[in-house]
Length: 252
Image (cartoon, rainbow, N blue to C red; front, side, top):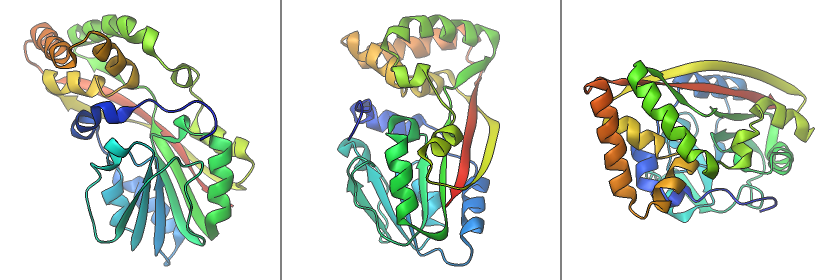
């Protein structure tokens, strides 16, 4: 893999799978629509623990899920039509004549130029590459929860990877690869409401909060303390978290 390696999300793989939200169906519907009637083969790059994988399987006959972290890959739900490959996207062998490729909240951890060109070469004419994901998510209410989490972000800040602080929209990364001539961009907000314990778990799926939790020497105790403080601040009320989702459908 060229460039810096991605954070080891596998160190908290089960938490990632449990608390990370899925994605709206219309994204996958639009990708399938752009592919036309032939939907035989797709790949997912940076599949993580499989948040997007089942939705891709609903629309394509065979799927190869490529994930560099073996602990994350082990959590991808099994399916007879699914092949799981533990490998970086930059070097994984891609099937020729792909109908579609997907990358869900993972493209910013990759060498986007290399991956973009490799995907473009593997896609059949009129195949589609959908790269999308949420930018750093944040709490939007109630105010007491926002205050707790904003203060905690200051504690997590020293552990933030520079690729997050220098976030570039996925459409910009795809365009910079020079491999695609047609881009259909999108951006929208997705919100979820979570109990305080689940909100604490969600924020500890981030690379920076998880790194801080590990640095305390007792991740479980840190998670429990954060959940307790959120519950006390909100009186147990649900916490609204906003996920700004952006990306693009790209075709050669």
